[in-house]
Image (cartoon, rainbow, N blue to C red; front, side, top):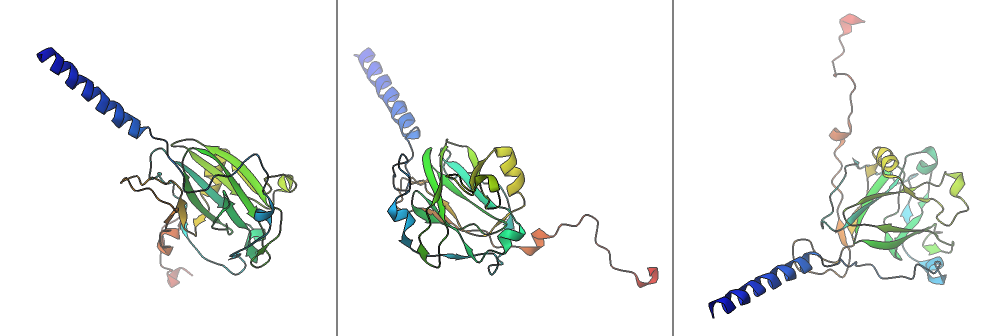
Length: 237
């Protein structure tokens, strides 16, 4: 009888460990809708009415310098989107709109970055330039895959002539070393988004993406002196 009880308790303990492990290994889901990546963007993506973002010619917003982040969920991936600073980008009047799986995310201004957190999987990032609130341009799009715990860098670059007539257009998935070097000079000027449905600290499952507010810009952190500051002494003139 005692042996039977021991066997029963051991079995229940093993089942408990297995169940716990299964929960930990549970596949994450996304708040984004599923789309057919075998099909090109259709009529709906090309013709839409929606919001638009004023470009760098008017929008002179400043932000904190780049700092890498850890995903809220250890099984999520972090995708950094960025756009370098240039004279071309600073003269933009209306910024191109960005969509991930047809859901609008912030436009990229000049010298700008933000990030999105995603469950492992394959996604479509698309862009089109609106005329006011009307979209009629055939979208350029980039299909990309992410793995758990990894970081990725996607660059928006309209000045790269080699991509003008490609499917991805200005959207380029960069090697990590190049992406880290370029994004280091950009600033966080918008909210970031967490598209993982499962909350990392509770059992709550989101239906909409979690907005991650950008840290308030602190000008004091933007000052970079190569030599110590000294008051000018008129006697040395």
